[in-house]
Image (cartoon, rainbow, N blue to C red):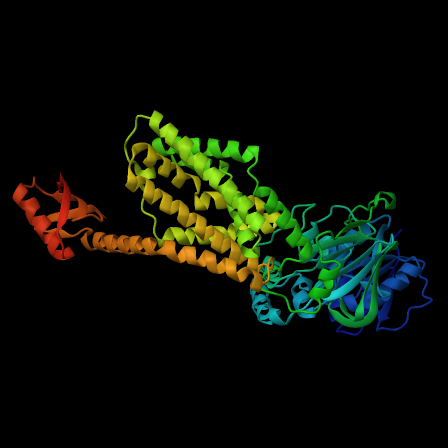
Length: 627
């Protein structure tokens, strides 16, 4: 016996598509009802109901279907956008109808409501311009990039808004946010899917993701995740500027009327009440996900890193800064950590000795991997960053403790490095040693950039793991190792060149880290001014020899490039290297088709001197090239 169905079809649009494509696929024993927005109150069909309706009409029908306990099936409609995701409807009408007719029993499905209105996709609360990209599920890459550029220009005028949350189990959250996205199923929104992750089973809960950045840089990070290749955060982890509430219902209110949207339609209200009705619908489908038992559902409130207390008041009264400024709690926490790092603990002393021994062995062995290991092992970065904070805040105790710990580390390094040098019968300046004998202004640039990174990583616990990379970049211990080798060899040039590199790194880090802490809000400018001027003075002083060294390096490189592949009287110059000396030292390989006599080499030397405009010392290696 053929099963009978009541079919609600959209009569407000051209129904020729329905007559030609949909109706022939349905059983003949169907009752047809043309829907034009009329009231269906009191309609109590004895047979299952099939709908060929768009999202807007479905939002009007579904509360009635829930109240009247209809068994309902969904047929794809031209104006159906969000319902596809909400009820896992096949895109092709033939597939959808086949799925409906194959369903012997209806599958219970939940229904999400916002202020008594049906939500098929998302509820967006807050700044509509910022949250709009999160609402666009299927936008193109160009559309995402365009939104990013438009939003970037308006960020300086952006402020957070205060919100109060009350969950089903009476958990209260008071914070400031740029926007809030609420969905039933995390996969219904690209934004929530990448924050929460997709779920395999449905739960009668909603998911509220709170966007609460404290700076423009954090907003840009959020926006860039909409433009760059998709990334789903690992389950259980959230960026500092995001919060997640999972509950059966939530009430969101603010100090004034709350701006929000339901599936892209703007609304205003004193509060936003979002809830999930468990098993509200009976859906004819075999593709709906499996439901989790209500007894296994747990409420989850993950908002520990969101603004709270006095910070909320500060954020809602000012525009977002370029980068996050630390509040008093963060200043206190970071300051206490740096105070501990400034101590010359037993671990610090042991690691310092091991690091310098490892670095010295690596330098003698001309081994980069061993030297990199020593860089990571060395604990010198901690007291230097602590010294930067002490200089910035004019804290005498922190400066004294950090300087003492740093001094002890330097003395230990020079002592044990010198001792190992005296025990090692090697006296060759290899490439690893020579690389640290002629610091230039470029090395100061490395130190400054590393100092910025070190201060930022120290102030942000979530990026503290990057300190190992900073230690490798700035390379504090190898120059001390070379300095110790210079003492052991009693070679002033080796010691002075390497120690100048160490001092370059030290003053560069102190200045850059102090300036970074200042920008991040760890000290008022009037307090930091004296320390910054003092640090800058040291940087200027040490920049003088670095500048001369850089000028010499540029001159050498230009001269080498001028001679590269040059042909002089049938002789080709290869592998040219120049070292500043008195007179200038030129090393070159001379290629010719026959052996070179002393007179020919002298002629090449004379031509090189003419091109460089000064006398040279020539080290020439000859080679015969046969064609």
